[in-house]
Length: 119
Image: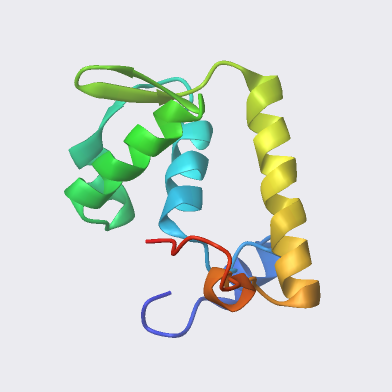
């Protein structure tokens, strides 16, 4: 797809949302979920997805704090809590839909003089 074109058969056989741009966190979660029978090193995930290893490590750490991935050094795997994963996915989709419908919130626009400065 990097050339800007794909084979017409690939186009015809793809799901409706298959070509939507995904952020790095979504790509990592989807990768781990699609390969839930294995545990992966962060560097291997980064290589497979074409991402920076340090960025992948940071994202995996945040996902671990949220209970979405498991970690046994040096390996990472998707959570085995399917209910939690589905719940987070539904919430994520809800926020995406709201952003599409109403526009993304910008914290600096919501801030008043009475509020602390957010860094």
